[in-house]
Image 1 (cartoon, rainbow over the protein chains, first blue to last red):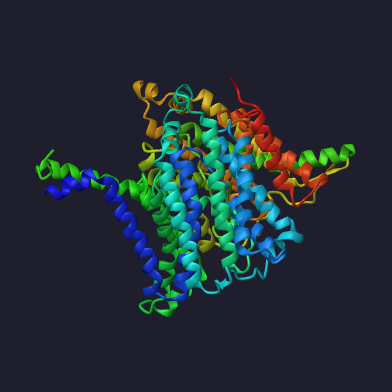
Image 2: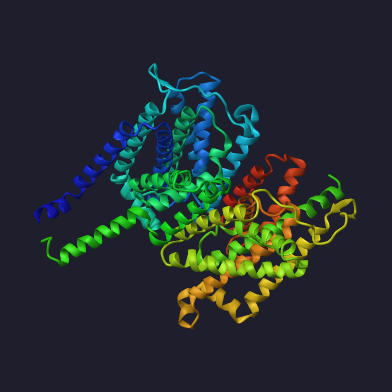
Amino acid sequence: MRGIKELAMNRNTYSKVIDFMLFLIIFLFPLFDSNEYHLDVAVIIGIYCIINIGLNLLLGNTGQISIGQAAFFGIGAYCSAVLTTNLHLTFWLSICFAAILTATLGISVGLTSLKLRGHYLAMATLGFGIIASTVYVEWTELTGGTSGFLNIPAPSIFGFQLDNEFKYYYLVWAFVLLVFISTQHLINSRIGRALQAIHEREITCGAMGINPAKYKLKIFTLSAAYAGIAGALFAGFQNYISPESFSVYSSIIFLCMIVIGGLGSVWGSIIGTVILSIFPEFIRAVASSEFISPQIKAILNEHSYHLIAYGFFVLIIIVFLPEGIVGGVKRLEAKAYEWLHSKQIVIE
Amino acid sequence: MSFSNVLQILVGGLTMGSVYALVALGFHIIYNGTRAINFAQGEQVVLGGVIALSCMSTLKLPLPLAFFLTLIIGGVIGYFYERLAIRPNLETSELSIIISSIAVAIILQNSIAVIWEKDPMYFPPFTKGGSLEFMGAYMLRQSLWIMGITAASVVALDRFFHQTLLGKAILASANNSEAARLVGISPFRMVSCSFILSGCLGAIAGSIVAPLTFAGGPLGTMIAIKGFAGGILGGLSSSRGVVLGALLLGILEFFIATFISEGYRDAIAIFILLIALMLKPEGLFAQE
């Protein structure tokens, strides 16, 4: 019984142990499942995780909505594609440039939209997303237009070719780990507490000597840079990119992912991304399994039933867990704690 | 730029602007009731188009009857949409309402593709005949229908909100739901009414625009974005503002498409909108 109490006292260590174990599972995953397609999906999930951790920092911790995150993702991807393919720069450098470019754009979009909040900010970021996706389609000399940007060379790091899913998986998830740790530190630092305060009482913060505008701008820039890095990783992995991957629809799905995972929680971003990315694959696997008769299979393949199922899935989660999965788990934890208290298992 | 050019832009702009205005009004009504953006608004418009088409081709109903049936079905769908997807989250947060509406948009869009067709379907214009000529500018007959029906809807909606008890109750609940509850207005029922109204508006918009854009297809997102943009441009909290904003956006778009660039039309229109938003964040035509 003392064990439970001690665990509660050392909540911080306890959550660190969980973090460690979960990342251990993530890093051991390819050793047990070497299916190329699974790894392919897992790489894309990792890339989306990087974007969503930034987006969640922006929305969950600072209260700023963005429906334009896919624009930064796309700019990072095209920047890296152009630099590595046309200018033959190394992959590392292209990631750095993608991050710098998106951060700069993030500062300028952030600066102009500092005055805006709520739906106005949503419109401004959505508008930025639309402008960016028009540019991808129209600026054909640079982006290849709707047919896409082809023949992006496979990246290599210090002469080590990252030519298959297995190697790329580790690269991407190492980046996720890096982003995870730095974001976790950020949230638990003075800056993170300031952000939380800004989220709850912006005007009071001003009076306490916290400059809300400065912090909001920093986070906007940081989340743009995360998306840019994710874009560069995406371009390197895909060998070819097209405007569809960076549409407004993607931005909206990113938003769904973090709300479903849990706002204000780094794990929430990862869990939401994993669940909403795996669900369509799961449906696809069910639809092609041998338990289903070929007639039904033909109907399922012909129409977009999996997307309808996806919509219902999102709806059911948000109706039953409005605070997201992490919020639901926390509520359950609190209930379990209460119950332990009432049975006097935990002694104060 | 001659006079007929200007007239041509005005006609084209006001036609699409009218459709955006109906969508923007839908956003405005829901925004008043819940402070959330209804992402399914665009799909409700597309749904209106395909339902009207089915009423005419499958049920062989004459156009006016098909139009009214579509209106009613739109309202019913709005009602169920609110009860099933919005009501459970009404007291949690706006963001969960927004996610619910995104989920419903995905469901509607793909259900339309499964039940009807993936590609847009031909929808006959309300009245046959070539386009009309007026002082050098050409105008489709359908444009007249679109502008007329939109104007009638806007007037009817205004009357409803200011002269009927139900309309006043919705406004009261939107303004101060606590106080409205004290005088016996159920805020839940008012939100429900808002969704029915916006469903009807979507159905109207969908059936009048279908002859121009065809029925079905992936149009919903773009129409919703334009309606929302128009609403924000005018000021989402005022009904007059959203209509004027949407009309202005329609004209702006046509102007850009004619004189600057067809491909960059949306991008430039949105860019101008963003500048307007920076200069006057509460909307160009917002009251107060």
